[in-house]
Length: 139
Image (cartoon, rainbow, N blue to C red; front, side, top):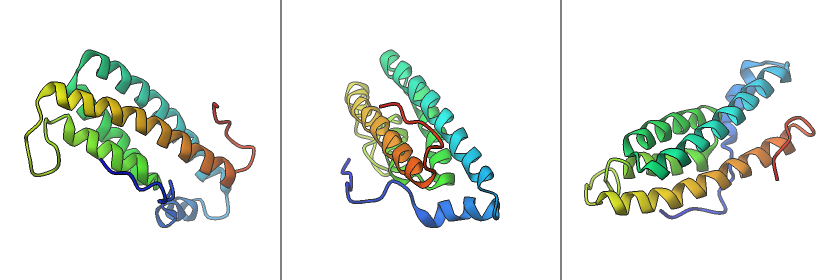
């Protein structure tokens, strides 16, 4: 569950692919980012509800969805944390082991859901610097 705080929140190679799709029209990439903001916020809220219910199947699904959305946009920290939530929701510590009981998994996922919220905010701040005055960040 280590986090590299020096890692930038956005992988520019991946994000550049989104920019290239819009060619010289910035509105395309802005739209993709705005959609990500909405999806990430909604998914995080649903993850918090599923966590309160200790619904590991729902956490599995939500983490996978947010991981893929983050991967497509290059939001690397959110992607990595969601992958860990995805694995822990299967009662596994990592890809190879199955040694967590449900209570331990829920405890770990709780910390990870909290972390992913901060990582989403960090990505929003990065995008707001990239697109000045475009998308407000809730502080």
